Image (tube, rainbow, N blue to C red; front, side, top):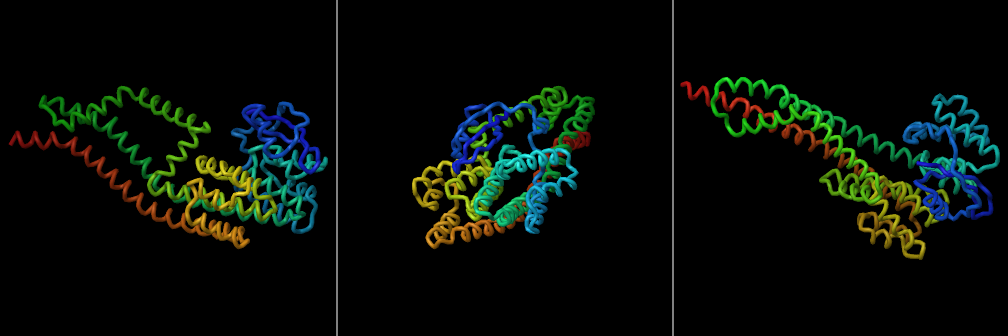
Length: 401
């Protein structure tokens, strides 16, 4: 995806430079205009170290979390930002991240705002990060903004680790089950088929079906693998498009048990990021726009983004969210109470905390159900294969008697 280097006029009268990553120039200009900047000059960015990075992912979430913890400690100690960067660069061992941090430090040293320096790298860093930093710069509370962002990031990272950790064992079970069935169909069943051919007797229907399936897979293994790979590629490409991604994520929300967890995780991401942005001093409308982009489920993100216009026109936040159809009644009611009492930040934090606990509980129940389901399913498949193997032997033995 190409990068475009913009020379912009900010709403507060500053002249800044920002690199925007977009599919084309028109999309990049729309993104800049949406953020309220005036374009003075734009050109396609030339070669940059970032272009060498696979997937544009310079830094893992955990490494970025560690970086912000160190930055917060140095800022809290009263060190200037540039000196803080110098100290962290001395100890930074990741060469790719070190190169980007060096570029950011140089931009800050030349007079570019910290938030704009980070924002110039597009999606390499979370969009909520540069927005939060910008609000902290205007309010003179960089330390508070970093502290709130760290809390947000730790919550998301912890939840993701819980999900990944919970799914490791079921994933291993499914992989081993598929591998076992594949081996039986391609190696074991053909041996039985050769054995039964020597008897010349008619085989049961179930045995003939299994042998035919085994022969189909063995003789067309390359075509089967190619077809699976092609289907996976098409689905992947389709899910990367705007329409396909929203549709795919909407289908994920309908998956039994797992869909409920994904839905709650999307609500947690929105409420947590919105609370972080509002707490840092970001106005409601820009905070809503940025919070919608922090939602990993693209269907939910699109529905939330669609109500930004309503909020801008003065409609209450809770009412707008209720119209999306993707926010739970609990979240809507608590946000309504928060808006009515002036305690919106507290209510958003309460929603996030509630769904954090709810996701943890549902994950435990899902894993408790998945393991026996997978084992029972594997047992049924193995039983059917064994039945198909040995049924002819039982018939032959009964005939001989």
